[in-house]
Amino acid sequence: MRIGLVLPSIPAYSETFFTNKIKGLEAHGHTVVIFVNNSKKGTFNTSKCKVAPKLSGSLFQVGSISMFKLIYSFVFHFKKSKRLYLLDRKDGLGLFQRIKNIIGNSHIITEPLDWLHFGFGTMVFNRENVAKAIGAKMAVSFRGFDIGVYPLKNPGCYLRLWDKVDKIHVISNDISALLYKHGYNGKAEIIKITPAIDTFYFNNEEHQLPSVKNSFITVARLHWKKGLEYTLEAFALLKKEGINFHYTIIGEGEEYERLKFAAYQLDLLDYVTFTGKIDHEKIKDELNNANIYIQYSIQEGFCNAVLEAQAMGKLCIVSNAEGLSENVLDNETGWVVPKCNPKALAEKIQEVLALSVEQKSSITQTAQKRVREEFNLEKQQQEFVGFYK
Image (cartoon, rainbow, N blue to C red; front, side, top):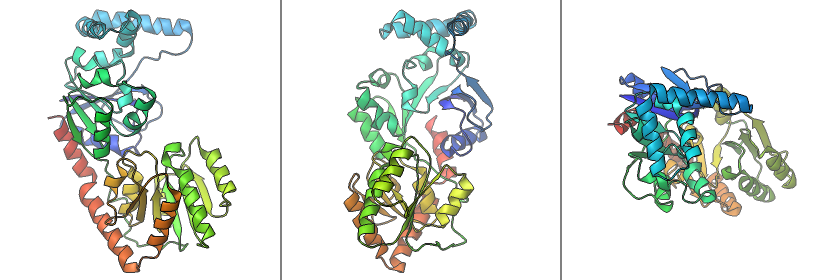
C-alpha cells in the first residue's frame, strides 16, 4: 500500500512514535509518503517527503506561488482538483476557501495513495475531503491536546470530520471517550495503539544508585498542562515537613520564567534544578540519578517519558489526567493521584518514601516487566501494520 502521513514537520529521531511507525510500515513493504508544512526541523530520513506550498511572505510571492499551484493542479490533476472543489462546495465552503484548499493541498493531490493519515486531529481542518478527492481512505490520530483542549476553544470543530473519516487512532481509552464528548457519531472504527519506547535502550541493568537519597525528576515541556506549578507546591509542603530532597525538571518552554518565579516564591531555589533541554543520553543519566519520577499533568495523552522512567526502574507517581492512569497502574506499577491537588501529591510522596525496600522493588519490577511486554517498539509496529488492513 501507499500510505500518506500528514505531519507538521519531518519527525526527528527522538520522535519514536512516528519514526518507529514509518520504519515498521516500510519494513513490511508499504510505501510511506510524508506531507509536511516545514522540512527544516527534522532529521529522520524516509523514502519520500513532500512539503506544502509556502503561502507566507510578500503579496507578490504568495500570489505567484498560489497561481502556479492552482494552474498546475487543474492542468495535471484535473479530476482530483475538481472533485475536491465540488466536495468542499457541497459542504458549504466559500469560493475563496475552496480555491485555497486546492492550493494548500496541491502537494497531496499529486500523490496516488491508499490511505491518507493525519498525525494530529488539528491538521485535518479544511482537509476533510482531500482523501476522498484522491480516492484514498482517511485516518486521523488524536493524541491529547487536539481533543482534550482544542475543542474547548473551538466548539464543533470536528463535526465535518466524523462523517468522512474511515478509521480513528487514539493513544488511550480516555482519549477515545473524549471523542464522544465532542460529537463523534460512532461511524468510524476507533483503534487504540499506545506509544512505545526502545526498551533495550531504556533499562537499568547497571543498577546505578542515586547520589541523593530523595531525588525526584520530571521530563516535560514547560507548559501549563504539565502541572509543574502544582508539583512545586507539593514539594513546598514536603519542605515544611522537614523532608530533604532535590527535584530536577528537564525541558524547556514558555512557562520557564513563571515556574522559576514560583520556585523562588515557594523558597525552593536550592531544592529545584531546571536543566533546560538536554539530549537523550543525558536524560538517561539523569533518570539513573533519581529515585522517583513525577508526572503531575493537568492534561496528558499518555507520556513516553513515564514509560521510559518505568523501564529504567524508577518509582513513578502520576496524575489521573487522561492516559496516565493507563500508563501507570495505581498501586501495581506506580501511583495515580488526583490532579490539581498539591496536598494529595505531597501525601502520596511521603507514603512512597516510607515504603520498605522490598515493597519498592516489587513495584519497579512489575512496572519494568509490563513496559517490556506491552509498550515495546516491535508490538507497536505490528499494530500499525494491522491498522491499515
